[in-house]
Amino acid sequence: MKLIINGQPQEVATDITLQVLLESQRIAPNSIALVRNGVITPRSSWHTTQCLPNDHIDIFSAVAGG
Amino acid sequence: MLTIADTQFPSRLFTGTGKFANADTMLAAVRASDAALVTVALKRLDFGRSSDDILQPLQNAGHKLLPNTSGARTAKEAIFAAELGREMLGTEWVKVEIHPDPRYLMPDPIETFQACVELVQQGFKVLPYVHADPVLCCRLQEIGCAAVMPLGSPIGSNQGLASEPFLKIIIEQAQVPVVIDAGIGSPAQAMQAMALGADAVLVNTAIASARDPVAMAACFRQAVDIGRRAYEAGLGAVQHQANASSPLTGFLQQGVA
Image 1 (spheres, chains in turn orange, blue):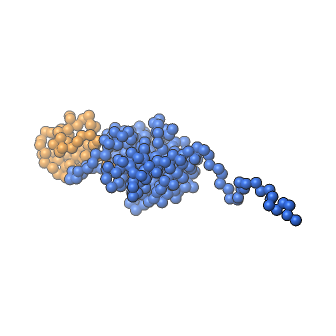
Image 2 (image 1 turned 90 degrees about the vertical axis):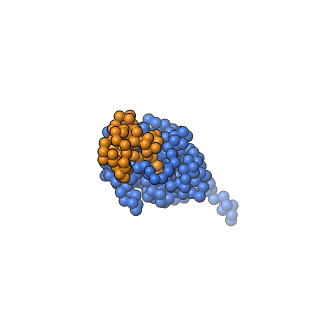
Image 3 (image 1 turned 120 degrees about the vertical axis):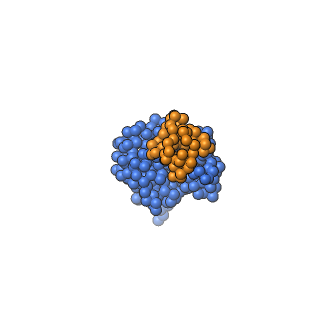
């Protein structure tokens, strides 16, 4: 199925959770925040939240800043 | 000791992590600064590029992290950024900065105030970056901000305390800590800010853009300490006229015909 991840369309396996999505993208789960369709998804829900076709997933991390 | 929102800070120098040549230099400079509070920004993950994990080493070294809302142009965006920071870092602390104008990065007072109202209600410890506006700073402390962070001069400009007369009024009126943020370009200026009675200063560009950022960070640490001690020692009053330090008894003329 297709997801829009950080603005880019990507094909991923169907029936995956946010947790599995992160693992498939090799993204370290520490120190990131996940936004699904404009709503922040708490870390505690990543392993139960299913991705649906055409979901917009945004992944944020901390970067250097003043 | 400096206390903000019931948290004690052993150092009155806060630093940012931006503009360093690389992560190792940044970490070494932050360590040398001995900063108790260190700002970070939030950004969409860049898949194509590898990036250093800056958080873990900072946290391991005992620095408390302060996520900022840089990039937000409205109160709504800043609130979202604060919520992202809370989720990402597990902190309710946030530096609210909303500066839609890219040329001077002047903080938008209206959007900032609106964001602070909402974030305080949500339970965040809110530290707003604002212009050196005494009225706005009073209003922000009234609604429950944990500190105010007025600018010395435009962000990254190294112009120092261009706003000094207004910073003095803000410090005089403050019931929450005043952290002078933005524009401090040299240890001398940081010392001056502390001697005015600021509770802390936040320095980034002046350290990051120095030829030797690590050495400069250590200079700022000492300058902030000395400035604070000078404030506590109580500066003498400034006067327009001279006021002799030695006795003026006129003895050189006495006894001359």
